[in-house]
Amino acid sequence: MKHRLLGTDDIGRGVDEIWELARKQGVEIALAGGAAMQLYGSDRLTKDVDFLSSDILGGLKVVGRLTFGGIQAETKSKVPVDLIVRDDDYQELYDDALEHAIKMPPVPVKVIRPEFMVALKQAAAREKDLSDLRFLLTEAKLNYKRAREIVMEHFGFYAADELDRYRDEYQWLKERDDRAKTGPRKPRTTKRARN
Image (cartoon, rainbow, N blue to C red; front, side, top):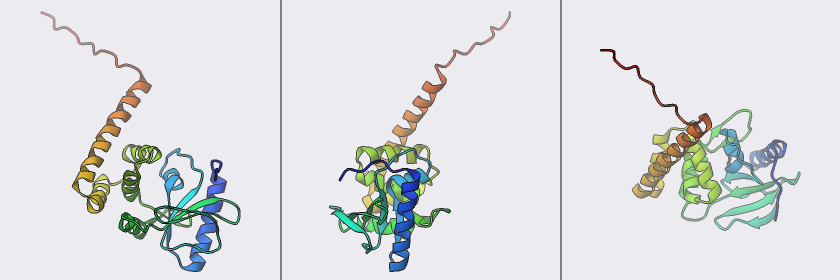
């Protein structure tokens, strides 16, 4: 199903509708994906609103199943949403991310912490996820040491080492891009010592 890019009003409506359903049904949810990235300052656009969820919510029009667990659905106001309920090798990470989600007023639902978003994005490793990972590691305010601990706990040493390489590469690219914006450096001028 093709969707258009969502504006902030669409995202807000989707969040409010899912929050209301989750509250009434006693289901734990947390905002993830592009909408969460926007809350962390990214200009990332999205075609749906992603939630990590402890269970499938009733009251939605189901339009598909997610291969890794969960559903693609529409709210009553036709906002496309993904309810992610992992049932694969990443279930423990997603359960931990949901458990440690935080409140970010004025958003009524909890939001996945940026440190957990790092692990989720590294695991997914699609082009848009690596772009999000770059933003998280260079622009977002996060505790890198904690993000690395999460990656180490769930994926092991090699994944944590890979995260270090991503961080170093993305930081280098950011510095290069920042230099390109300010123009070439002017050579230093020094005064010659007089004899």
